[in-house]
View (cartoon, rainbow, N blue to C red):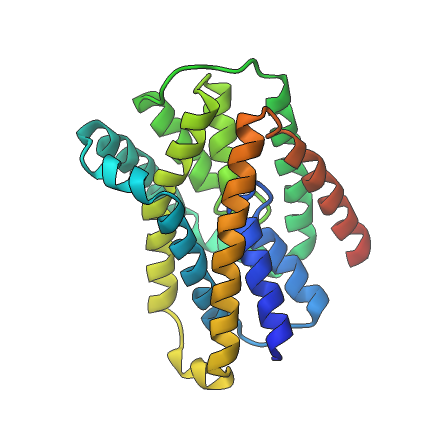
Length: 250
């Protein structure tokens, strides 16, 4: 695999991991178009290092503050517990979608329609509570399915619950850290690390750096769009992209 393809996958991972457009869905489909048939688990784990670092960098102060707030920790634990139960229960079902680009494209359209629906919601002004955490955990669990965006489903759920957009953005990503880190650890544990010999260190490093920088950019764009009342705009992209992928896969 040449460096350009890894950089491209790093950019896709970084941008789509945080924007409400489903990173796993895009990777499933785009890997098919790029003709990448080899085992990419090692590379996928590597790219997640970049996005995790971007998350830690962007929310550093919020993470420190949350660690000192007992109620915030409890809300995050509620989200994590519900997401974890869903993930463990339906693990095989979710994994089956990684080899099914057509259903993933259809789910991307469904994801877009949900995000578009948030444009009809009147802006709320309250903080997230325990009930919001439970519903967000459910949304985050369902979003393990490729084609369904984690940030789209969780932020959308909080907006529908009348949570203030800035608070919805902050809580969505703070509560995602344990789930993303846990998924990363499990994936790393199951990775065949002998595959590292198939990639040049420069290629892997380039992919990680690209996913990190693109991740930071995506977080900035999403925050600005959300605070500006333009979160629903991402729904148009998901619907069009999903429809285009379906047509191209025929």
